[in-house]
Length: 168
Image (cartoon, rainbow, N blue to C red; front, side, top):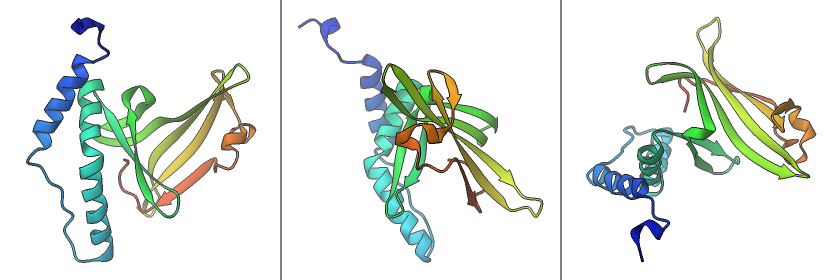
């Protein structure tokens, strides 16, 4: 078979190999004796073993990736958001102040629905930092109330996460 007839991406092959080489001697450890440090250490070890190679492959293959934590109230997971599905709205260097993330897309009855989240780092007058998350829905490129899309009707339109000093 001719090389050009395969579905193999040379960028993907190089990205996977470079990631493997870069991570071969790496490790991550959270230091501390408290319950939070122990939990974070277990979580980071899981992330390192199961997701970090994928993060490296996507970064090297596409140029950027966001690792977005999420939870169902019982478990914590990580969504890897490729660079075509997010926009950094405000930053200083590597420090993010706000970002817009495409979270979902549905096709129904010849319509395309998209759900985006706007994450913004804020600070109260008392100096307490928090993240606000606003859900925004679009139908065929025009903004529509999120409650009008049955699949997303149960998602809160606005959320506040207190005591957070950085995004993602």
